[in-house]
Length: 264
Image (cartoon, rainbow, N blue to C red):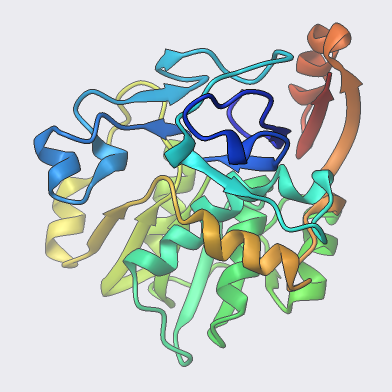
C-alpha cells in the first residue's frame, strides 16, 4: 500500500496544504544522517518506507507522511491517473541513472505494470525500444507508444545497448544478460526474492555495467501525466472499496493483472 492519491486533511505545521489533493514519495528520511547530508535521502539510514518499512501504508482511510514528501496533483490529472505517479517516477529513474542515446537499442524484460511504464517513457527518448511480451494484452498496451514487442525466442544475443530487467526473476535476469552486449548496461528495476544465483564471472568478462534502480522523481512524472504524454488508465483491471480489500488482493494475484484500485 504505497501507491496513492489523497487529500490532506490535517497539517498543523503547514495549514496551507490542508484540502490539497496530493501524491507522496514513499521514503520518509531523517534529514541528518550521512546519506541524507550527502543528498541521498532515499537511502536514509533511519528511513521509514510507506507500507513497506516501519510506516503503515495506504490501505486505510487515513495515513501520515511528512509534508516534504508531498506533491500537489494538477487539476487536469484525475485520481485514476495520479495514483500511478509513484511507479511512473520509478520508471523515469532509469533515465536519471543511465544516459539513453537516440541511436541506442533498449530492451525491457517484463511487460507488467512497471515494465510497461518503463517502456513507454524510454520510447520518448528516440531510442529503439523493445519489450519482451508473453500475451496479447501486453503487446496491445505497448503499441500506442511505438514499442516493439518481442517473444523471448526473438530476443537477439548481444543485441541491446541497454536492458531493463523488470521481472525480479532469475529467468528474467538470464534473458537480460543474454540480450545486453559486452560493455552494455543492465538495469535491475525489480527486487528479487531470496538469493538468486547470478553468473558473476560472465558480468565481469563481458564488462557489463550493472545499475540498481529504485524510486524516482515525482515532479516530472506529474508533468507527463498533466501534459497528456501518456495515459496509464488502460492498466487498471478492477476497482474495489476498502471494505472489499481482501477481494481486491485476490484479484490482484491473478495471472496477467496489472493494477487493482482500492478506494475508501
